Length: 123
View 1 (tube, rainbow, N blue to C red):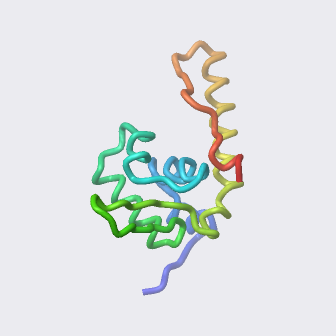
View 2: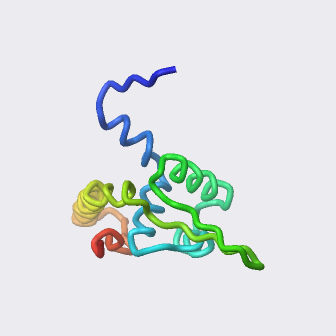
View 3: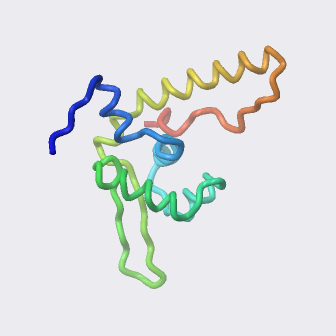
């Protein structure tokens, strides 16, 4: 069955939509990581959800999964060249969100930001 999109942004959201995928990608913007380190960086994600999101990103060729033949098994995730092309989108989303948080704080809302975007800045 063919896919029909109303707007190009739908194709983007098909790949990076949701709560966890952009966070995973920003973490991988620093460089390759093991799933345990990703889980540590995203403490509210369940292992099942993390695994599902990683598989979807791998199927979409946004990340690569490398398995090392050792005991215990070592699996490392990294951005593909296609995944690196999402840099500008993710940085723009981060900048927009940070401005929104600052506006909320200036209105007296109880909102905080733990970390500024920084993963894709290094690329």
